[in-house]
Length: 493
Image (cartoon, rainbow, N blue to C red; front, side):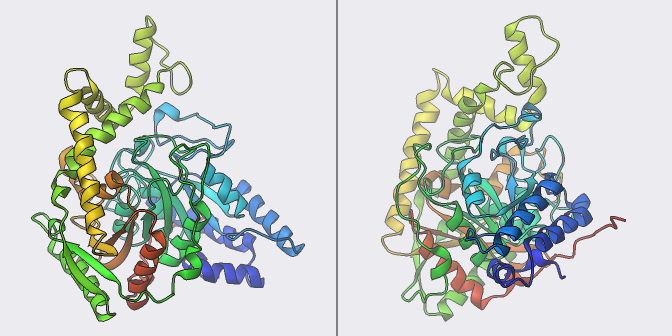
């Protein structure tokens, strides 16, 4: 069998339903692929081969018995290791939660089980999803399948790399400031952040609660549509979950999207943007023009403040959310301390990495009594202005096209000692989280070094159906998503 995980989701589902391939065949192929190449990539923190195969066998038996199966029956899905699954260690790539085993499933895990997907493994991330390179993991660095000297992006780097390297056809990640879209762009796959509230956050270990969203990775837009359809829906356990119908994304993808209006913001094409990235994005917009889309200029005047606002709001919420890790309730506890205060500080000092500590300190400072109004309250006011910019823009256009990242994937170690430069790699993605809008990254070219370049499309809140159709419209014309990296492998014999 060829590397089946590189096939798109409809092809896999057709083969499974026809009996050409069994779920056991497919899962075995993916597990063997992981065994051969992941030593070079480091996408997975944990793979339970026996449990994954047992899920596949159960699905095959039910299919053979004529039972009605879920929409993703037998398809492997990898899960970012900050999403809780009952009985499965969930570490957030942190020493703090190295031994944490949740007693419950996240809502999205429940939905994947209902869809009869096979949960194939847990993927690496920047610790507590704080980072843009997957170098902040306490356990390992993940490498980009296109060039193993380069980062896959972050924080969902493991989920993106797993799909790009053909280890799984689908995966899920979380996106707080670009943590799905940026690694998707770096790894040459499709990644999508839904509207805030479209997918339940119940069971997602919180980083910044007003920004976090769970979303899909796939080889192509169709796979992302299938997976988003399975993940979406109201959950009363999440007070921010929106109770609105979930469109049949996978069924409407190829319907004509006449009269499409695409917005281009001058604020997205500024100093610091790599020339090859700019050229690839403009070439993608030209494809839309050739298909009859109207391209219009829009303005997002407050976008220049996005990075500053994000790095006040997100660390402030992180400071609050991570206060629970105190060495008492759960998580790491120091063994050498003199009193309770010493135990708190020792436990947190030992178990949190440098980037997590940095963000906790930034957030605690911004929330402190003397600085709350000057920093946090002001950031919330500017956040509202950023959302209003998008609201006004979407009165005139259906989607906004932009780069995903200022450059293609950078080298491992290149930015790790320069936090500000690292933070600026998310300058084009942060706005969607601050505004709560959906955004998608899809491949639109390669650099002269052979590195993938991503196109970002954003739409108005809860316009995922239109966003996916617009993305698919480009994908049908351009074949960038069919390009695959040549990943080193080793013999398992």
